[in-house]
Image 1 (cartoon, protein in one colour):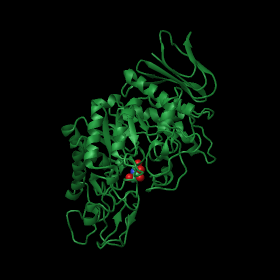
Image 2: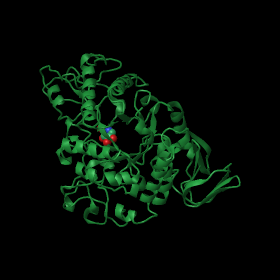
Image 3: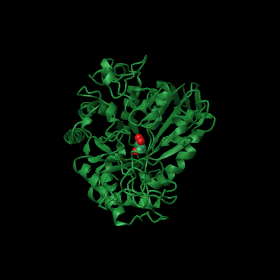
Image 4: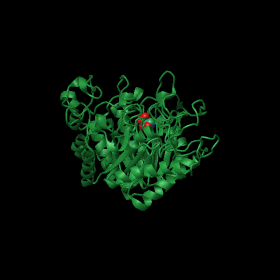
Amino acid sequence: MPKWLKNAVFYEIYPQSYYDTNADGIGDFNGIIEKLDYICSLGCNALWINPCYDSPFKDAGYDVRDYKKVAPRYGTNSDLYRLFGEAHRRGMHVLLDLVPGHTSEEHAWFKESQKAEKNEYSNRYIWTNSWFQAPSGYPYVSGECERDGVYLLNFFKCQPALNYGFYECKEDWQLPMDHPDCIATREAMKDVMRFWLDHGCDGFRVDMADSLVKNDDANKSGTCAIWRNVREMLNAEYPEAAIVSEWSNPQLSLKAGFHMDFYLNHRGNGYNTLLRDYENYKDGEDHSFFCKDGEGDIMRFLKDYLPKYTATKGDGYISMLTCNHDTFRPKYSLSDSELKIAYAFIFTMPGVPFLYYGDEIGMRYRKLKSKEGGYVRTGSRTPMQWSGEKNAGFSAGASDALYLPVDVTEGSPDVASQEADENSLLHTVRELLALRHAEEDLQADAEFEAVFAESGTLPFVYRRGNILVALNPSEDVVSVPLDVDGRKIIYRIGGGVAEDGELALGPQSCLVLK
Ligand code: NOJ
């Protein structure tokens, strides 16, 4: 396990929208470098950068045309290497986004694979043997290439699936995982990883990590075997490199070798009931735990989380996130005061937390036309709001030439105003992360135990190592009998007292006791 993960707090950057230094309306590597000190000042000591490789951008870069070359719109490979160096100089680590399940249809491998003549890449993607042989259960494209056969997709139409083989071969065109051409795909992906690790990258967020082997069994035995093989390579050659999976099944992913797995926003799961419960009701009624009048129920979270946590303790980390580039921003339904309590939770839980750029100031979700395959996700991908200056300080370019419109509507937050306001969400984020760095018991490993957690009543109190965290997301004053003698309050949001065997919390408050 890379040692640095224990105290890591990640900041996710959607590079298109972070900071534009050459006035072309789109963010760039130099922009990220210029903002590293700001990111450090938040308490984030690690970055995840969404795909920044050469791409036709039909899925915001998740359609990779060349795994080893960055997209010119962000700068050059040398700029990215410099970013790694600048981050390391500040004690930070940088993860790139690895997209192993598919490439762009414009990738050189796919161009070769489409040819009628057999070549080294014929089996790099998954093809049936003839144009009328349709694969059942998988999306596919037919009728576009000189090669006979149809090819399988992994996501959008622009993303043909790479061929890691089939766990169970049911048709004559399905190759087993140990076929040399399927092993070659896996080795090609390891070669991509080595390329970036050798240039100073510290690991990868892995896109659709569960999607590699087709006809896999319920335990994803085939896909897990591939990741175990990758992890062996990392252990032997890059023991400090880290991988985090987009999988949201830690019982499988962490045992397969991932160091971290995202707890993703899936309708009805534990994480989803905390911040985005409105997705579970047709009329949009919000019973999110962190909604102040939602009458949320922490047991809906714990019933889902605890088995995951208990089953994977010691294997790796579950990663809590404020949001990501695929999800509604939490500000969509929660106010800043609600977010303060939600973030107090996210940043004091076990595992390795992720903060999505802009969530530290409560950037809003915008209703926008789809950009680069974003569809409903586009509204969470708008330019970072730095100040009250032109384009919110994101770019000196023409406002109508920006990657996406900046939110300049009434009341939109920005970094400069929140820096100046000591009650701002930004300040709370800084305080919470400083607390996490100061207290080992609030970091990735210390034990978690629910101390007071009941349906229909508050507060929610949990223990991390020797520290107690009490949360009251509601507007009511709440209390619980609890032995707090000898403990001191080391951090608070809102009002509250701990004395005489009782913990009393004011409206929308958080107490941390040691
Ligand atoms: C998951 C990524 O997070 C998403 O943005 C992308 O569209 C799909 N995978 C396909 O790569």
